[in-house]
Image: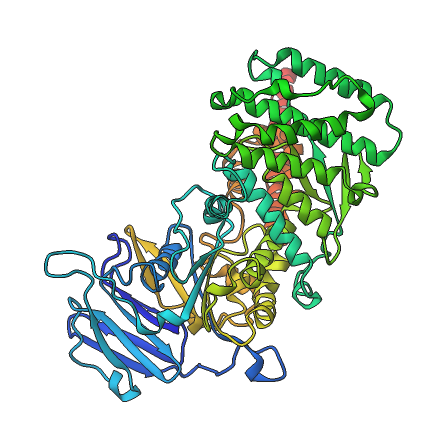
Length: 613
């Protein structure tokens, strides 16, 4: 299924009666007064326009369109409309609208029964009208779905985290936005009984994000070739020891002090780097265990007196392992919700640390470095055990070596999309048709990466969505995105009098595809009031006012500041003009001085003549 056109009657008094065309082979226009829907062939349409392979039939991209506008103009609102009305399994269409879709040779126009279509030429192009209602006679909701939506997956991506209420993955929706994953990562882990229900949302999301990145790194080289930077080869893992005594004075004070002394004496005897790392990790585990105990009153009944003589430093790691094994078999532990899974997670983590796999890890400061290879087996096991070994308080920090925030953003984008075809994730959800919604995906990207984003997405999708049909709808503020798309594939939105309005392209009907970025920036749709920053414009205006209206004494007093500020200006025409104004002001001042000298000289001559009389 491909979405061709939307006409939304009234969405929250914001998007009202606007023609939204997505750049297909047809252009649609609805006239509410005449109850008429007209269709015309798009004269700019080119089949397989987004093919970047030698063979058109290898391209999975059926269409790419962008929704472009300033903040608050309604870009995300249109994506949300598609998510909440066109996804199979989300409750069906819930708003009064006209929705035109195409599925192979079948072309349908869905319209709410309050929106009348009595005329138009749509039948000339073999479009079939389908009237819908989403309420029954008693006002109850009816699940009315678009016919072909059952074979269409909708993927939504956004890297913004603003704590917005997320749309849980119902039906054919695959939501890989940050807002959704922060919640759903934890929900999925709890439902699969892999963590306790008390686990921290943010920490579980952080670990799962790393998991997705690791699996992406282990994928085929072709997938990774689309990234515009060198992928990391190592990850740093640092334990941070949480002092359980800081939480509050508790029943375990003496026991914790014994543990602390045992670890302190044990560390000084360690010679092997691997042994030192193991000891630090186990110290972090057990301190975190006590921190969890002191933070949860319901856990105070755990019989900590099972702990065996920790003072013998030569076997402290093994004794800690034995303690958790015995604790796991204690009857009172089995009776407390989520605690058996937690204790088992700690036990599995300690077993992994004490295994032969950890013999050759490299120390790094107070932590360790793990190489990233195709298998990533040790790293994957470590993450799996770690996320089950704490309830609310994480105790390890993970950091990829050498990645900037922009590189991490694009790394997340590609690894999240790869997770959709990962056998461990959403494979069973992915249908033959895919609609991808990306909400400002270029955020955090350097302009060079913004230029490359559309091409890289096409290349990546051709690989991971092979054999499927993909429609991409992307929102953006960036002229770099616009320069990769023809005008008819861009929906331009403006916010006028509190309403979202679709505008008819750029000024003077400028073409966007392959347009010079400077040309696009000069269009008022992207930037109003010129291309100079507001602060710089303010400084320049103050200089002009001073040079034109200021007193000469003030100009002379600020001479150095004026000269230096003018020479900082990057625009050569403005800089040259201000320099001329500055020189003219000083020249006029010199002329004033010459006039004063002449006047004074005349007065002296006059007084001298009077004296001689």
